[in-house]
Amino acid sequence: MRLRLLLLAVLAGVAAGVVLSTVLQEPSEYERRVLELVDEAREAIRSVRGLSVPSGVDVHVVTREWVVETWGKPSASGEEAEAEEAVYKLLLLVGEDFNITELKLKWTGMFVAASLGGDLYVVREYFDPGSSEAFEVVVHELMHVVQGEFFKVPEVESYDERCAISALVEGDAGFTARLCARRGEPAEAVAVEVKASWPEVEGDEDAVIELYMFPYRFGEAFVAELYKAGGWTLVNEAYRRLPVSAEQVMHPGKYLSGEEPAVVSESTWSLGWPVVKRDRMGEYFILVLLLRWLPEEEARAAAEGWGGDLLVLYSVSGGYAVSWDVEWDTPADAVEFYAAFNDVCSRAGGRLIDVGVWAIRGRYVAVRLCGTRVSILAAPELPAQWRRSGLLPGYIGAALHIEA
Image (cartoon, rainbow, N blue to C red; front, side, top):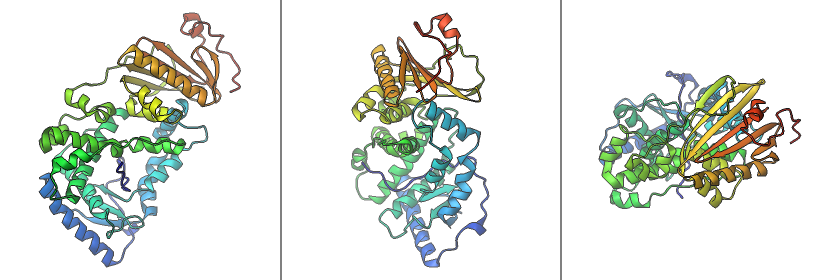
């Protein structure tokens, strides 16, 4: 496993201008060493990647506090963050005490370096220009500047597709940085060494951090596979034929063969609640969710065979509810996930009140299996029409007092 200290994020929504008076003025010796690395990285990228870093890249030395205040706080709260937290809690990824704002600020505070608006930012507390990793960090960040110049990446709606595109972007930067640091070695031989690293989940914070880590755990291995299959030509082509799912990144053969996720139809739960958002979560989200509660081997097996999904978040009773329809490649895959998610409900402290229906954390979680589809509903109440329509045979009613 090769996880460097480098932690970055897509800084969407950050104001284009920066107030330079908030930037800490560091000793000139430190700045000089950073600029030397930038010059070295420019030449290495041109030589290895065949692309030129645009002129006019400014280097800003900033503090961790500045990063958290300027980049972290604007994105750490608000409706989008609230909805994200609700999905995690409803699907049992995190506990009821989890706070997404605190986690996002912590994540932002881990940045070593970043690029934004064609400029390079290094965090004084964490970035040591004399370290063995410094050169690769600078190459990685300058590659993001290059990507912004040569490749146009569209905004997409689903979480799963954003994961896939971020993996290409971060993977290209990481693989290029690796090759630049090992100039003189055959690129094909280096590519063979690159392997994905699997998530490790031991608690609520780990689970969400691992969701953010997807591009860094799988992106470089994905790009290395593209390079082995077709060199930089195929890597460049990937920006025109973007990966569309985390599954394609985790299993590059699916990208190369053009296998795309199934379009999953709207849920048949017949809810009638106001919709907050629709999303596709993908194989990696399922993997991390299962790893939160199950042994690694069992979680990985149950996550494979994903075919597509549709998540809908609703506003209900002053809170939220979620329906999640997950399509699987085969009925056997669906059965495996159905059993795994019921196991998650049990391990999370749920009380089984009917077949596939759990009372847990002051709400209901219902899990339904039909052919190759598993449908999940988590809500503070179960609609009364379910009993009348036979959606939950034998269900004892929606007016239960939840004790679990």
